[in-house]
Image 1 (cartoon, rainbow, N blue to C red):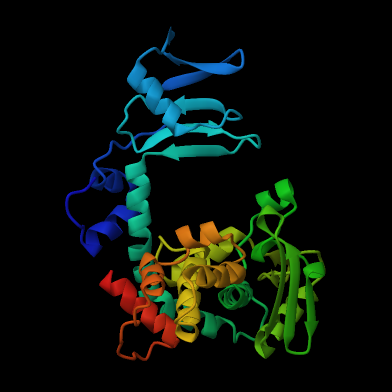
Image 2 (image 1 turned 45 degrees about the vertical axis):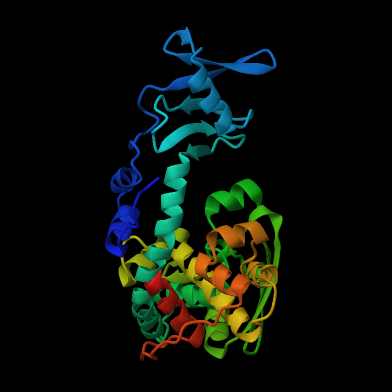
Length: 342
């Protein structure tokens, strides 16, 4: 537990550098390539080994028990130090690496997340300026299609998607949408698809320019929705790497599509609170979770700034702010004000 509150600059540095973050949290930076304890199946339970010997130390065994490592994990590695920032790793049923972190590490990452969001907010006008420029290109270039896709993400909060999720789960996101998922009627875009964890999404947006660009993309031969023509006039699909690189180039290397959704979560919370100052806090969370397609718990933990939850619970008046010519909405201006003070 840290004894004093860290400055914004130190929290931002900790967010960028995991070794520095571990130091700030007074933990040891570790990885699972170093020697650790192993878990071995025995009967209906497990035993743990240190080298070639069975682990019998009660303190270590109690710590391992508290980690609640799922029985289904294989190739389990457990940190020998109770102070390691990673306490355990393993492979789940789909052979994806999973982690158990030290509680102190989780607390710090939660704290740095919204300081990181303030830095993103400062650079968001720069991203929007580039999108506005690239989206006006007469040719259907890579930059124009990426700009349109990010613009659609900002307006609808669709997850970025990935080829691995599409192949493993049959779930889709922005960069993996197919022509069949989209219906365009004049200036209206309707998107229907199965997203993460099988959640069905039905999204409607009226935007003349975006509708025209999405239609141009859809008219390109092939199943993928977002495609462009390269310099040799060959069609190419966009992917999550291209989209994230566009965001990084326009802002900073540490930002990605995930920050757009995190930003949107708190902005939507403020928008709801401005119109419904007397509503219960869970009603606000449900409003945001519906917008983002998350559960209430996930939304509360990862997408709404803790101060906004406090404002709603205590029925506080949102802070005043000085309008700046940056293209921000009222809710966005208020979010920057809150982030700056916290």
